[in-house]
Amino acid sequence: MSEELLDRVIGFGRELRDEGLPVGTGQILEFSRAAAMLGPADLYWAGRATLVTRRADIKPYTLVFDRYWTGNYGRRVEMKEVIERVRGVADDGGLEGGERGRDVTPDAERASRLELLRTRSFAKLTPEELSELARLVARISLAVPLRRSRRRQAARRGAPDLRRTLRRSFRTGGEPVERAWRERRLRSRRVIFIVDVSGSMASYSRGLLVFAHAALRSSGNWEAFCFGTRLTRVTRALMRTDPDVALARAADEVLDWDGGTRIGESLKQFLDRYGHGGMARGAVIVICSDGLDLGDPAVLAAQMRRLVRLAHRVIWLNPLQEQAGYRPIARGMAAALPYVDTFASGHSWASLEALADELAD
Image (cartoon, rainbow, N blue to C red; front, side, top):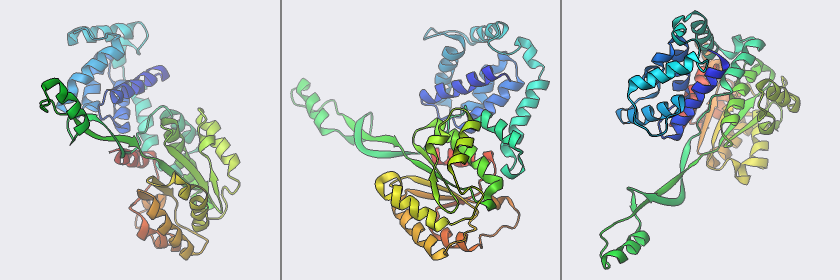
């Protein structure tokens, strides 16, 4: 699949999200693979099979598809006409190959390549493969979890809105015939990514920062920190458009890369400088570490107790979980585990993507 077509496919997923359809990152990747293997005449059905999960979403999906791929705005058309226009766009070069798109050998290999990079452990990826993965996923938007704010807005159902109901009753002689309702607004919840870049995490830390880069490019509600023996904020460095440049800038700012690990002291720095200032309050904290701490486990346990009082949810990703028979018996891991809401692996892009979709839901 060409870079131009991949951008258009991802843009189509964003259009569906803006329309209110629950389209996840994994669904967009499935649609990308299906679009690579099928011809343009099958593009509508490929998207409908991978992006639509509810019967009620078929109509808005069709309207967005017609508007995005064919440039039609509001005029009712038959599906045969839509397919013909998509085929015409393909013949003009907007999509690859017209009926030649059914020659799936190059595109199928590309789709298989993407799937291989998604599922392979970060520890087994070469630097070139990590760069390739970073370029592929940099265009994908990662959703952030939502929370209900204290502010309310007009709605079709919910709690009675007495003020608007009384105002409307003036039209009907004081009788509350037309009732009004309101509900609490939804706001994005902050997600804070704290990545261990010590020597024991060297095989995974770059891959985890690839995910952090994609997340930060998707939403301003993500924050990223790195730690070894001390804490470094790398949010601004990872906001660079080019993933290779962003990771290089982050590596330059982190002076203790590939050094020792002091998780408790690093969390204390985070809470003292940022957490109690409001950043961690009500946020989702994602700590990525193998738990091999050189510091005092009592310090780590004390900081985890402070953290859970502020955060909405604490998630610990330990890439060592990909190893068969792994047990969290390291001193640091054992001290932190009682305060963790979710203990999962983060050894591959697929596992991180599943976690992001879970948080968004």
